[in-house]
Length: 523
Image (cartoon, rainbow, N blue to C red; front, side, top):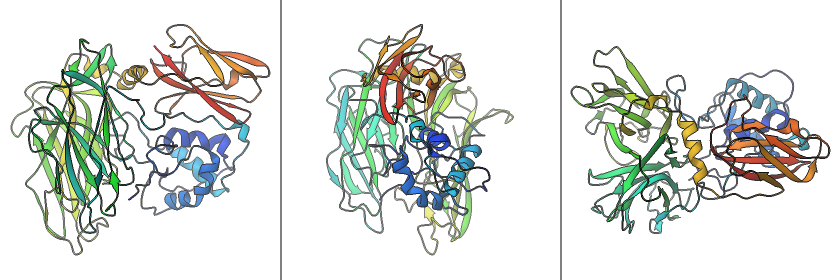
């Protein structure tokens, strides 16, 4: 079963002149689509070039025309409620540009003027890591009537306690892994369970670490001063995989793995992160032919005993879910701290959403959740015809009302940290450097200017773009190119003349229709 991630959105009426791939459209694809749709990415096809994208025009138009059933790129949260990293939502202007392009025959334009695309690492984004734990080969037993939920407990074989700074879950078969929840079984008490009904651990001491859904990015904690976050994992621990294979996957093979990156032994100043289902209701009933609203809060009475900082949030429902939100409420009920609102729930697109800034939840505040479920025949995703009474359960045809949080104990100033900058600064610790067609120095870049020295002189119209590892354009250096220019420089500022944060960057180049790239670390 394939979850199609191609870029698309609600239709809007369009006016104006035709847009071209090279002139206006390619950069929108790069910014909002190719993080999924690149060679080796999680989507079933690539959209990084005109030759790849133009044959998909009919499917794109069908997806964005009035009444289209799904929107792309997938971004369920309401951005007016809260801000997160890795925002994939399209702006109204971007939607109009893309519809103009389609309605006017999707012209390519001048290929030599196409912006160079972002560069993505094949396979693993972060590299080999310090520990790879792989579940056994497993053939899905999903049936037409039910999905397959299985759990695997795999020893880490660690001999000393280490602190995790990044987690990357890599599905063995992207076509059938609906989601994977990855836990740390600190005490080695869990057992492998392939009954088809296992979706969570048996012990409260087994803690959620990360999750995979199609389109999810690796979990990367800030790991450089002034903010170093991590999770302990020690001797005797297991990695516990809770896997979901949907109907239609029967007989297909998977062997998902998780790659852990550790802080060097002896690293100090690391603050521990926890992940728990803070909002949860396990005892509800959703009557047939009714729309039901559920609420839950933590704690049941009073407020949280000590201030915490929320790092990320992950709501979870099944097919009857219509909307879900969570927030923190002051003791006087006058102050609301908004965390997430998903007004149109989509079961196929869920995961952890990392806040752009840590969210302080003061002592005494209560954390509340609200969810709406449509158990009527008007819900096109209702798995039962006619509708049936539904309770909490593990199968997709059951329901859940859960909101996970990643959180840590609050320290003064937490709410001022820009997590995008801190994660970017931490990325320089992961991939290697590979150059082709250009020399860059100094690399890593500290203070001062970066020099790019090209193997052949640049011609007028050459395109030189600098991207971050999320595929976002940081700086366009094309204006520096010209006939017989062989060296250009970069002062480290982005297109808004603001110094770019430390981290890993890709310099992507189009020289007369020939594309090549080089990696840069900025410290």
